[in-house]
Length: 249
Image (cartoon, rainbow, N blue to C red; front, side, top):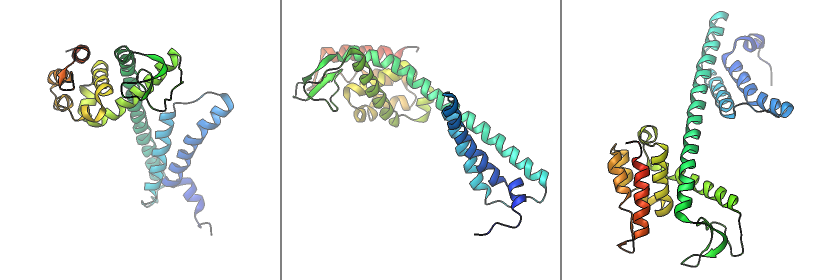
C-alpha cells in the first residue's frame, strides 16, 4: 500500500474526501456529545445529514477534480448546502409523520379501548385462546395479569402496528391529503376489529384512495355482520367509526 503523490492536494480539495470526512463527523460527534453531556441532538437530522454526506462522497469519486482550487471549493460548499437542505426536509417530513402517528394514536387508542373492553387477568376467549387486556393474544398464557397502565401501553403498541400495516394499502396522496387523525383512527379501528388485509382490500379503502372520502366512510358501515347477519353491537360501532371518519367534512 502506497500513499499517492499529491495527497496534500487531495486532502485539501477532494470533494469525496471532505464529504466522507464531514459525514463521518456528523454521525460520530452527537454520540460523543451525548456521552459527555447526557443530551442528544435530533437523531433523525443527524442520520440524514451524515448518510447524505457519505453518499455524496461516494458519488464524488466518479468525478474529476477541478484544476482550479476556488472552483473545487465552490463545488464542495454548494454540495454541502444541497445536502443540508435535503436533510432538513427529510427530517422534517419524518417529524411530521411521527406527529401524525401520535395524533392518530391519541384518538384511536381510547376509542378502540372503549369498544373492545378490558380484562386485566388472562382469560380464554370464545374459541379457547388465552386473552388479556383489550383482546391481546400474542404471548398470553393463563395466569398472566397486567395493570391498567400496562394494558393501555400494550394496546397502543398493537394499534400502532395495525395502523402501520394498514397504511401499506393507502396511496401517497391518501396519506398526505385525505387521512386526518380522526379518519385515520376510524380506519385503524375497523382494521383492528376486522383484520388488516380485509380492510386494506375493502371498498372503503379503494374509495378513499380514489378520492371519494364520503363514499369510503360510508363503506365502513358495511362491516356490521357476523355469521351472515347484522349484529347490533357491530352496527353501533360502525356508526361511531363513521362519525369519526366524517368529522370535518
